[in-house]
Length: 399
Ligand code: NDP
Image 1 (spheres, rainbow, N blue to C red):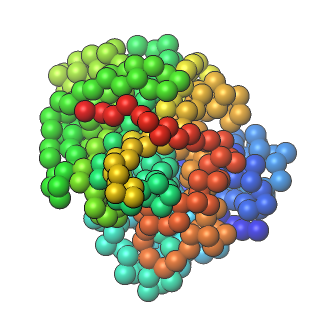
Image 2 (cartoon, protein in one colour):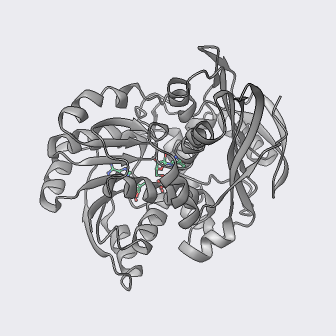
């Protein structure tokens, strides 16, 4: 029995909320609060026959006072932040002011700088400790499940993990020449930024898409993948002891990259405001308005995703390697929750992470990344709630 407030009602929230309703013994009551209340009401209507009692509200999550007033009126045990990374700090401030637990799926990024890192949220640790509340950061797939895979491998299969390669493959085809699978602004900011990886205690920066590899993914086949900077490599570098290197690769098709290059070359991916006919516009936000809404891709996307981690290290004095991954089918996801697999693979762990906090399994005062808790209950929940994982003890390595 719990009361949870979900902030945001976009692609990921739509999945997380439906999964909360499937898990009604834990999520008996939910408040969906977002910028556009009609979206919350539409979803509530679709879930009328579920046992979870749903309330809706409008909220501007950039406004701490508004958030505090809403939290005080509903009194949730935990807030699940599924708005955008720009709102993380204002929502954490509101949680502190009301002594409410906090969960999110993406780390804070200032609106005017395309640079995400944990330092801003880690700085809340002492205040969350003092307030005796938990903040669970990055409870999506990557970050999120990839971090849990890492501590699971550490706990059960390795004495020391030396190398982690996180591989995120999407072989989904939505039939559009160019579209992004989640919020286009966040997605394009991520992939046009410089890449980086962590090796021997140092960050090594690369040009965007400079490092390319081809990997033959289980159930998907060979795909081009590119090294990107990604959130979880920052926290894994801190929390996995004896680590020598951690990298992150994501697959992109040639059509996506060619379109992106053109858009970049003409300035359409810029986040610097320009004046057009007396109005200030941000080119990337204008582009977002032109692109298909990621939520509309669900019904047209076919194919699978495969996201996982390849570990190398030592067990009982001998070299050991291991690959833990999940394969998710876009059409199956759509059949179950009317969303494609990208939102599905994020929304399910968002629900599970919130459940871990709500039911006390992962609750302690402070600000935590996913790999700082016991992975076993989360790994069991992944199997139960739609993201079963597999282990390959002899994977091909990435050079
Ligand atoms: P969407 O753009 O589909 O949804 C965002 C929602 O937040 C919308 O409902 C939007 O309202 C609402 N929102 C935005 N600004 C505000 C505000 N100021 N006040 C109140 N509500 C607001 O994004 P996604 O669902 O694709 O992504 C949600 C989060 O999940 C993002 O932070 C994203 O980075 C993260 N993510 C994490 C992944 C992981 O694996 N860890 C993978 C994919 C995404 P409106 O409807 O009015 O626009």
